Every structure is written in C-alpha cells, then in structure tokens.
Amino acid sequence: MASRKSNNNTIWESNHIAQLIKELSVIRENMIAAPIIAQKYLDKVHPDFYESAVNLLHYLALRRHDLRSLQCQLSELGLSSLGRAEAHVLASLDKVLHILHSLTDNIQAAAEKHPAINFAKGQQLLKEHTDTLLGKNSSGRDVRIMVTMPSEAADDYTLVHNLLKQGMNCMRINCAHDDSNVWFKMIQNLKMAEQSLDTSCRIVMDLAGPKLRTGPMEPGAAVIHIRPQRDAYGRVVAPARIWLTTDPAITPPPSQTDAVLPVSGKWLQRLRKSDIVSFQDTRESRRYLKIMDVTLTGCWAEITQSAYIVSGTVLHHERKGGNSERKTSVGVLPYTENSITLFPGDLLLLTRDLKPGRPATRDSSGKILTPAHIGCTLPEVFNDIRSGESIRFDDGKIGGIIEKVEAEHVYVRITHARMQGEKLRSDKGINLPDSNLHLTALTQQDLDDLPFVIQHADVVELSFANSAEDVALLQQHMRKLGERQPAIVLKIETRRGFENLPDMLLTAMRAPMCGVMIARGDLAVECGFERLAEVQEEILWICEAAHIPVIWATQVLETLAKEGMPSRAEITDAAMGHRSECVMLNKGPYVLNAVQVLNDILRRMQSHQSKKQSMLRELQLAHTFPD
Image 1: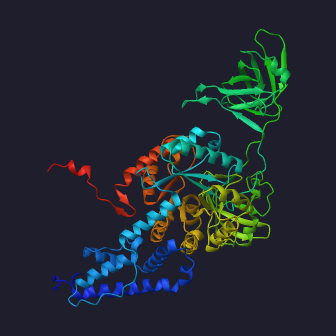
Image 2: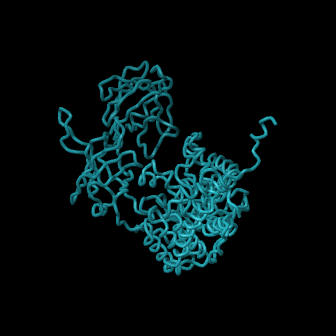
Image 3: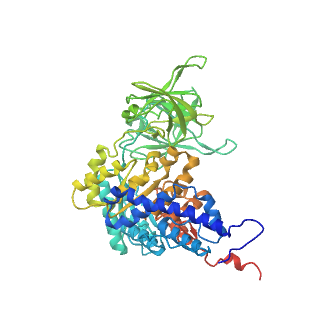
C-alpha cells in the first residue's frame, strides 16, 4: 500500500507507522506479561471476576506508560487513541495494531493470539456485576440512586415509601448512628414499602470504622444570648420568643423558641397574660419580658431587646395595676459549647488523653501563657506520626504541620485557617494524610454490629479501607458468621486507600460481588481539594477496567437536600455522577426533592454520556440554525 506523501515527514509514512507499531508492541508485551507475574493473585479470584481481574492487570500495565504522544499520533490517523479502552484494554490495543499493520507495505504476521475481552463483553461484565451488587434496575435509568436514612426513617413509614416510589434503589444505613433496634425498624419499613409498590431495593449497611476525632472540650459559659430578629437597619421585625417552665426536660416548649428559662413553679402560677417581667442582664441592662400566653405546662413571653441571661438572674413580676412585686431566680442553664479559635501561626497541643481541651490563655498584653490543647479519640496514632507531617481538622477547615512529637503531646503549628480565625470544637475529624497509620480496619463496635449486618444487609461498606489486609480481615470475620455473605463495598476515603486500590480490588474480587465507593469528603482532605477531581477520575478508570461498580458519594445535591435549593455547581456535580453506577444522597429535610431532581438529571444524562464516551444523539440545538 502506498503511503501518503507531503513535503514533510508525515504520520502516514511507512517508517513512522512502523515506529508506532514497535512502541505499541512493546507495551502489548508488558500487558501480556502482567497476568503471568501476578498469577498468585489471580489464583484466588472468584471465577465470576477472573476475566475482569486479567483485564485490570492489562490496564495497569498499559497505564505504566505515558501514552500522550502516541495518542496524538493515533488520532491523526483516525484511529482509537485508547482513551476509552478501560473495559476491554487488550482488545482495543490489538485492534489498533491490526489496522496499523494493514497500513504498511510490509504487512507483518498477526501478533500471537491471547484471550481478550472484546468491546461488547466488557460492557456486559460491568452490567452483570452492577446488577448483582445493586440489583436489576427496571426504571429505565441506568445509574442507581442510594439514599442514607435519617433516624426518623425508623418511625416514618411514609418517608421510606415515598423515597422508594420516587426512585431510591438502595437504602443506606450508617451504623455510626442509632442502634440495631432503629436499624431493624428502618428495614421493616422498607420491606413494607417494597411489598406495597411491588419493587425491590438493596439494603446497604455502613460499618463506622475507626474514627479519629477531637476529644471533649471544657464547658463554655452557662449563658443564654436572646436576640430579636432585626432588619438591615437594626429595627426589630420580630421579638424573641421565650418559654418559661419549671423543668424543660419534662415540659419542653410546644413550638419553636429562642430560649427556655427554668423558673419556680409557684412564681410561674401567678403569671397572667400581658403581665410584665423585668430583670437586669449580665451587662446590668434593664430588660422586660411581656407574657403572651399562659398554659398548664408553662408560659410564653416576648422580648424586643437583646439580653444575656445566666443562672441566678432575678426575674421581677410586675402585674399591671398591682402593688406587689414577686421575684424568682432563673434555674440551672446548660453550658454553651466551648471551642478553640485558631489563626495561622498558632500552636496547638494535641494530647494523648481525653482530658477536656481548652483555649489558649493569654496575659494582659495578649501574649500566650499556655497554648490551646485538645485530646484525640485514638491515641495509638501517636506511635505513627512524625514531625514534618501534615495534619488537618474538621474536614480540612484547619490545617497544620506537626512540629514535635512527645510521649503525651503532639505540637501542631497551624498553617491553614481563615484570617479571622477558625473554631475547632469537640468531635471533629482529624486527618493525617502523610502518616502511615496502623489502625485496625474493624473496631470492636464494628465487630459487635457485624452479626446484625450479615443477617439483614445485601451490601456491607468497609469504611476507611486502606489495604488488602483490611479487606481480607473483613472477609475472614464474615465467613465466621455463617453462609450468608453480603457483598463488600470498599470506601476509598484516605490517601493510602487510593494508593492501594488495585491490590484491594484483587482481594475483594475473591468474592462473587464487590464494589467501590468514592467517599469524597475525607478523600478530598487526605489528597488535597485541588487533587480530588484527578483522584476520582483515576478511581473511575481503575474500577471500569475491573468491571467493578462505583458509588459516587458525599455532598451530592447536599444544599438541595438540606435547604431545598441546589447550587449550580451541585447540578453539574450530580451530572458527573452519571459516570458511576450509583449516586448516593445524604439525609436532609428535602431529601425527597433531591431524589426527584437526581432522578431527572440521571435520566437526561444517559442519552448524552456513557462513562467517558459522549453519545452523539440527535441534537435539537442543531436544528435551530437555518439551512
């Protein structure tokens, strides 16, 4: 065949095509060798995943090379650039090589045949594995919807019924919250809804895993700050509502309130509608309450000025037209939540024990006398962290560098916080992305929950999966609990988990079902927010090569679910979720709306996109331009 000529050496010249063949053949040899080298892993893989595991190894061998220059040259020839080869990698490469050979004058013998998953088989395997893990989808929507259950789903059958009716395919129960009694009620509500709607829904249970969090704080002041609503000019538009009662625990306010004040029962009984109660707040400012309603369990009062009230504040009852004054003292008020305000450059001591933390103390000139300190819930991490490593708190809102590690303290220099300061409170997450932590994958609480999970769940999610050993440990404990074996989903939420993903996948593929969740909250903190887009792409590619379904999770349509209105960025993010096999929504008062919107987005996107491939359906916009 004559090659196309031009004044310059072109991509069509025989020697150029021969060079392409040579480079691609070397890559192919590496790909063929990969399963042979990794045979000890393949020997343990379940038969249903064997072909997929081989394809994964082929893909990993391919991606050890920088293919960008080759891709440009192949595209110039009108050939596949291998950019969508994940599900059928060897077949894609062989097809390209076959066409390149046909373009040369010296047609070479075909390469040695090796079994390879073809294009249709790759898509079929991913679909089969998705149906096995997440259930067959009869709704006409390719991507499943998973919804995390709020606690009220245990007692609100209608909520579960409506979620299922609107398109929920998987019910997720987070074992970090509630208990087995609540979980059982949620499951019972789901089963009734399934029967009512004649449909099915997978039950997914999430093991909490090791939670590295900040310890308790010393209590703050026992003070209530009461504030009426004001407009932009500072004018009161609505007074503050106060509930007066003898015991707030026994007689809580019957509707929304701005403050609850415990008072003497005898004094309370003398109050009448329109009475005035005066007091002096902590700033010695005179304030007045007007009694608006009297009930059997308490009284409603209003105030049009801000006030600070503490335990012992004296309330004076002044009845209109009366000549007597009666008084009482405000009872015990709850302590406010304390916090540590941190600025860039501050020093924070992380302590091994769980003694209550406290803010820094300063002298009269503002210089620090004692640095702020707070404990951590897993002191064993002290054995694994080193100076110079990074540390992050509260979903990455606060960042620092470990300056020094001592037996009982870790010295953290704050490097990232807002200039106006960032508040660190108790029970906030701690991430150590640079540290090689030796935390057990399964806590004692997880092991206690596992029998219930095995009995009731279709899928068990392994939180903070970091290594193949973590996966094998869960498989081992599950086998001890009987023949019923739910599928395992690996939650990738740490840098170590991401880096060990291929090894963990091959271990998970020892079972007939498995999946991966991209838990983008902790993952963003661990890898860096700026790297999250890149990291989640790589996870999608690796899992597609293994024909393993992916769950797209964390903050999907979160503003919509919590506040009733999505942000523009959330809509785009939800649309990106179509490249996975399942999208997870978190709980919120508007979660039903979120399911409806997500269902609509996913249905629209499936005619435009299939994984990385744009689907060129007829475009209505093209008809708007005149012929």
